[in-house]
Length: 60
Image 1 (cartoon, rainbow, N blue to C red):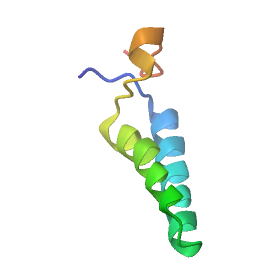
Image 2: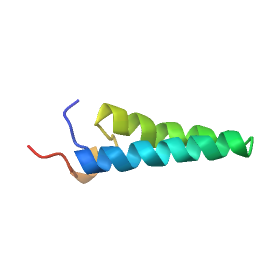
Image 3: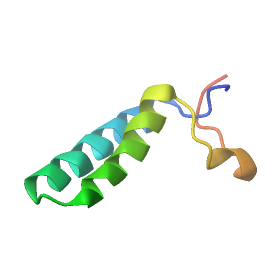
Image 4: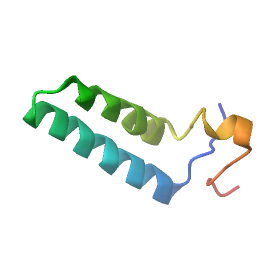
């Protein structure tokens, strides 16, 4: 897995993921689990959705 998520993208994904998870916990909704997707892609620095589109925000 090569990096295809840049630093700004990572930061935004991690923040968004944490907010979604927190809202899911606050409202006691399983939708908070959706926050795991941007959180994990931000932490890993790799987004599988970027592969078929040929997108990379990572500086090489």
